[in-house]
Length: 324
Ligand SMILES: C[S@@+](CC[C@H](N)C(=O)[O-])C[C@H]1O[C@@H](n2cnc3c(N)ncnc32)[C@H](O)[C@@H]1O
Image (cartoon, rainbow, N blue to C red; front, side):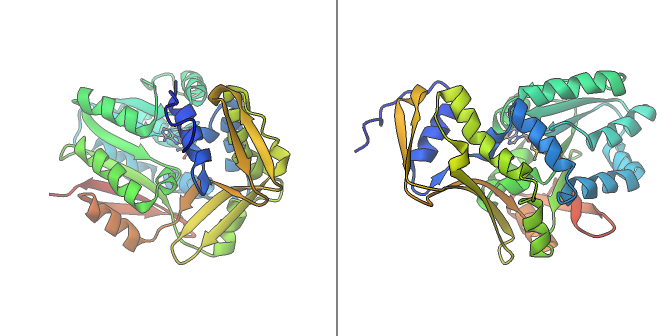
């Protein structure tokens, strides 16, 4: 019996950290990578030559701006352009710019767990694209989706870019897509960015750069526990480790304890014991092919209407609608 079974948590972060570090094997959710430091590290990752995902999706948007935005505007009238996990909006700005230049009647509604990244996005849009109406919403996908579900009447185009869906296991992705479907009307669209299966080495390199940016990003979750929950993790005593299974298409990130150690987390009144080389699983980055996407869509009551890809076919954007 654990002496903390009746512990009360003030935040989801506290609860998930406690549960993840008392579970076996240990795990922490990648959604906690993102604070001011994590947001900056993710921008550095996007700028790395190894992280092909951003360039690939950027080139799709640049080469197909007209076709993509025409799909978004198809029905005419006002629509909400809702973006789940928007980040800094670097790629989305290509579409926003084109829509704005062509007089589209829309409101951009970026959702993100990081208030810091939303503040930056709002400030940069005010400067670069002041005519784009923006309403930010801080929260997890599910919190934000549930709120939107109750309040929204305009036609919706829902963006889920950067292969964010790859952070979900297939079962979770189906659950997630079902929730998205539940708030879609017949004419609404889901515009999904999805990383494709490819040479396994290319994938490993994207999540294990030689300069150590990805390692610092992964370890930022420990720094956050130190800063926000009074933890005393020595981040140098953990190793960033990436594996990719080309059969399942699953890339996994771990933090591996280099030695036997005890970490105290003051705010949770709790000590986490680590054996030598014990792991904390922190992130999955699932890779897909058309068959997997068709299967996920079918399981969640959606259908693929069309798709776009880059010249090297590293990445795809799928346009989905509700299936009846
Ligand atoms: C990998 S980044 C991608 C950002 C952007 N979509 C892009 O393609 O550049 C993931 C973004 O989603 C946010 N995020 C991650 N998990 C989330 C969750 N469960 N709920 C809401 N936002 C989340 C992060 O804060 C981050 O800004």
